[in-house]
Length: 143
Image 1 (cartoon, one colour):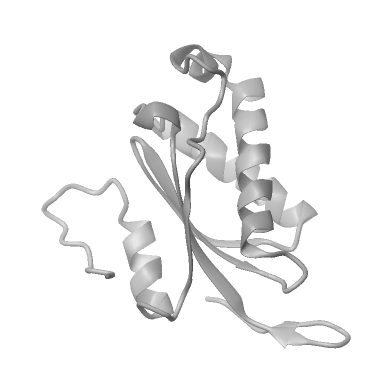
Image 2 (cartoon, helix red, strand yellow):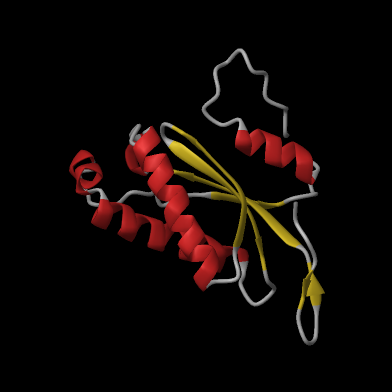
């Protein structure tokens, strides 16, 4: 669960739901890639003030539910996550790069939303957690 982040001159609770599709919508997010992605995100959390509350992958896109600090804009949070995960996945799993023609893992576009504008924190968390689940599990409608 998210918590207030207390700094010397501010207190914040900034939650973002980020969706990043793979380049060409290629289905490269296998179980192994998913596990490696989560490991890399743990390292990002240690280096930057970005807390990963939930990560959910489907074959061709990933949902991140993150909390950050006011010093990072939503765009900067997305840049940090996408650049480091791409570099490290290609470095640690070179077979993934072979599946992509241009050597990029992420599509140019992405979605980012503050949590609370369209759904509650718990609804977003469950939606992200259930990514890739069978169609028998009915996922909540967000929008």
